[in-house]
Length: 319
Image 1 (tube, helix red, strand yellow):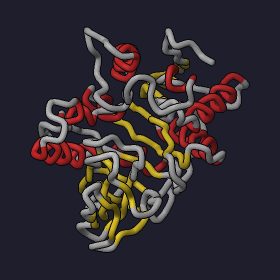
Image 2 (tube, helix red, strand yellow):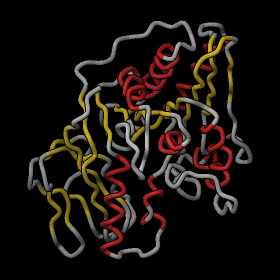
Image 3 (cartoon, helix red, strand yellow):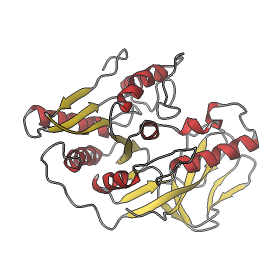
């Protein structure tokens, strides 16, 4: 067990100038592949197998100790939603955010390591194209794409904030839970979104199923490749996985009631044809695929009024 009273980080600074990288694990406490991968890399640094010579790297093996100590997704709320500093922290994750957000803002690049509940292949989430819009203005899409291409997976997903904001509008129009936090687009801000808001860039690597022992290897490989890509350590840089499959989250469907149920145990990136039956509402009405695509992030434990699953389509953006 680790302390619930502090946020522990490990910083190694090279003696030559270079980028400032931060690597985070266990933002959700039951997602430990990143934690294990980080600890392996720290051990390699301690034994001289990796030497940081330029810039700096900060490792945060466990971002949410309360959730981690209980091996569950959240402590008191989802740390990866509405991530921002607050002068009036109410929940454990608010206090963590007050320590984590300044740490993120002090860096240039973020590699955020996660895993998911159901079986499936690892994938990486990137941010928007360069833009000056209000939702998520950004100016480092090319660098972020290069990072996404080199972490060792070939499925790249974008469109999170756009899909989430569209879902917020629909949620408000239906009036299911008036005034709730998840009816604010900023509720969709997590680690990478906050990093971009502070002038940096980053990707979220989903390392596989929570309990898959290979997830640790995925995280470990991604960290080493990121160190090599940024020139922080003299490590061999492997070519990107080919061919790259680029998808975008096109729309989100919410759960309305506890009795809403999926018609089968869906896993992320299962292909859907237009009209395929996905779920049944409590009143017996059917939820069908509005377009051909892929189901992503199906959540059998979603709370009513929260996102239940996403539909992904081929992205117009390549790497």
